[in-house]
Amino acid sequence: MKFTYKAQTKEKTLTEGILDARDKFVAAQELRGQGLMPLSITPVLERGFLSLDISLFNSVSLSEKIIFTNNLSGMLSAGISLVRALSVLEKQSSNKAFQVIMRGISEDINQGGTFSGAIAKFPKVFSGLFVSMVRAGEESGSLPSVLSEVGLNLKKSYELNKKIKSALMYPSIILIVILMMVFVVLMLTQAFKDLGSELSVSTKTIIWFSDTISQHSIIFFAVLFGFIGVIVALSRLPLFQKYFDFIILRLPVVGDIVKEINSARTARTLSSLLSSGVDMLKALTITSDVLQNSYYKELTQNAITRIEKGISLSESFKERTDLYPVMVGEMVEVGEETGNLSKMLLDIAVFYESEVENKTKDLSTSIESVLMVIIGGAVGFFSFLIITLIYSIINVIK
Image 1 (cartoon, one colour):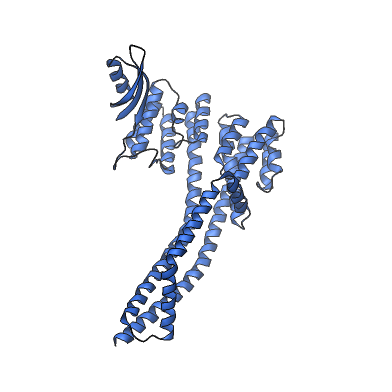
Image 2: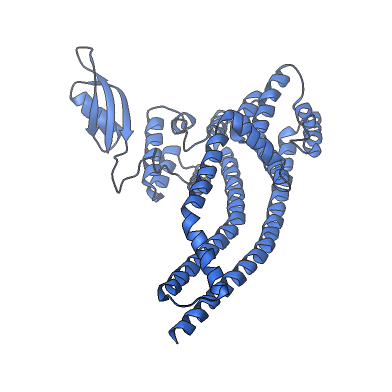
């Protein structure tokens, strides 16, 4: 593989370049053989049609990270060294980008670096939460159990994302079916117009409908996608993102689910960090980065300032019942009083994860019922159009 390097010559001048070597150690040996003192050696992923680039295709999927974390935890618990475990996982992975990452992590550790320091060099793959928990596990000597906890967190996120995607899949399929039926109507209408025969009132109506769709379809889709593009672009700007988050939180049904998702995510993240030995202020900082909604980010950031002034965490939750259900603040207060805050936060997370799962199922069922009525009407309408056109074409041919 290729490496970029910076090195110092015998004349104390700096030089840099690219070289091919089997790994980082071999690259360093080659540079020393040329009379150079290596200052930095960085692996480069070659760009090409069949090659993967971490910054482009990136990707190490969430499911791959779950497998990596759980397997690494299991091997460390079994007494296998970290470097050997990483080597085994590298061979097992079919993702070339992930293989390069694991190889780079192993090389950093072999050079005396820490596991947390090595994975911190890949922020697009390993989040701040992941890195902080690993660092806490290293410091406390409980890395295998911490990795197991990280794996559980990743699995919960994966399952939640999967449920949300599943709820959106059904409407997407129905939309595709309706568009296909519109296309069939357009094709039959054109075929009938080409016959040039006398048209009935119903057939004229269908042709008018078809012409309206075909003439304005480009404008319609341009406006639709343009509108979606503008909304997406604006939602990424800090000012508009806050308005967008405000609207989401106040949507019927969806707003309640979003609040419970953020409650569960806040509680689970804090619980994992605190149980791993991370101090409260650092845990809140990381939790703020994990949360997506700007209102929840702001609350956790304000909680840091309030704690520094001697105000308890539970007070921050209890004062914002518009964001966190009353139960969250009350249970956090009990956890603070009993000295068992991380366990209480875990209970909160489990409860609201269950609530989100149930409400997502109910929402999916409701959406399916409404969409069944819509698709039934659409199928009936387009079936009538298609049968009418086919019948008219048959009469003309006769």
